[in-house]
Every structure is written in structure tokens, then in C-alpha cells.
Image 1 (tube, rainbow, N blue to C red):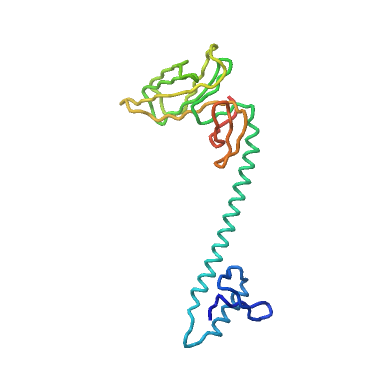
Image 2 (image 1 turned 60 degrees about the vertical axis):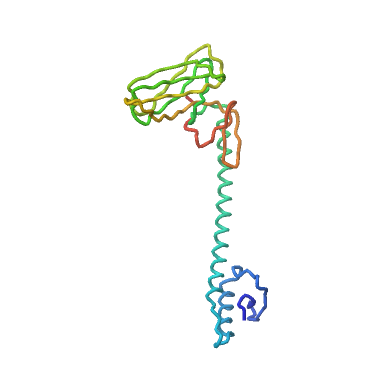
Amino acid sequence: MGVDGIFLNNESQVKVVGPDYDNSKMTKEQFLKVLLATIEWQDPLQAENISDFINNSVKLREMEVLNSFENSVDDLKNSLKSTELFYATSFIGKEVLYQGDKTYVKDGKGKFYFELKKPASYVEVVVKDSKGNVVDRKEFTDLSSGSYPVEIDNPSLQNGYYTVSVLAKDSNGNPVDVDLESFALVDGVRKKESGVYLTTSVEEIPLENVIGIGG
């Protein structure tokens, strides 16, 4: 007798169900009743192996729990994204410090940071406008590892974004890794599948790349 076709209701009556019945929907009491009934009614000379029935029921229950957990995680992610979106709106109209190479200049003044991962004997900093023209260049020598602020002060520069690049080399002429932190003026906020982004006039900045607010 196939165990998938047996079901005992609360009145201890046998109910026949289809072979596709989802065993994971049974309560613990119903499962034990079906298991006992299977043992009681099987032919002793042709005893049926009930391990598959038990294993399948356990697997179905595990899948049900896993699906429920995944749904809870998805709900939590959506809730966190909504919270991040609400939080990100507080940046609109403000300058933020973020990990990136485009820094905002207003009234000829701007600022950015470069961080050396190890000492550098030579560092060249170049600032370009949106057309690729060099508007500022600075050179440094014998710098230790760490973060260094660089200020832009040029009254002839128009308000807007300027791209920063840094070339650093050690005493042997080998390149030194550099991280850039720039300032951006936030115009708005956008929510995408991949996360929440702050929007500027030239790019979108992932919220997790924001380091600070103001100068």
C-alpha cells in the first residue's frame, strides 16, 4: 500500500489522497498517525521501506522552512532599502565626501583627498575640467603613507565638477596605490535594484560610498 495515498483525519478515519499530496502540510500528529498506520497495515512478508517517506517529508519541511526564511530576508532587504531611501533624502542640497574622482568646485574653490597605501617618493596631482583641459597640477615628494588634503583655489574656474587623477611612485619607480575622496553636491536620490544612489549633475553615487557630509 502506498503511503502517499493515506491520510487520517481528526476522527481517525482513513482518507485517500492523491500521490501528489504535499506531506509537508501535515501536522506532527497527522504524520505520526500516517506512519503508524503504514506500519500496522503493511504485509509483514512484503514490508515496505518507510525511510523514503520519512526522508521526503523531512526534506519537504526543510524546503518550506527555507522558503519562509528567504521570504523573510527579502522583506527585510526591502524594508532596509526603504529606510536607506528615506535617510538619503537628508543629503539633498548638501555637499558630501565620497569615494570618487570628481570633485565639486564653487566660486573657484574646491577640495579633495588622496590616500597613499604606502610611502611615495613622487606624487603628481592633476585636475581637469569637463573637456579634459588641465586646470591645476601639483607635485609632492617624499610622502609617507596616509591621507592628504588638496585644495583648489582658482577664481577663474566655473562652478561644476572637475576630475582628479593622482600618479604616485615609490623610490624604485614602482606605482603606489592611491584612493581618492572627493566632494559632491547632491541634487537628488534614486532607488535601484542594486541599492540607493545619490544623484549629482554628472553621476550617481552609491550611498555606501559616502564618507561624510560637508567640508
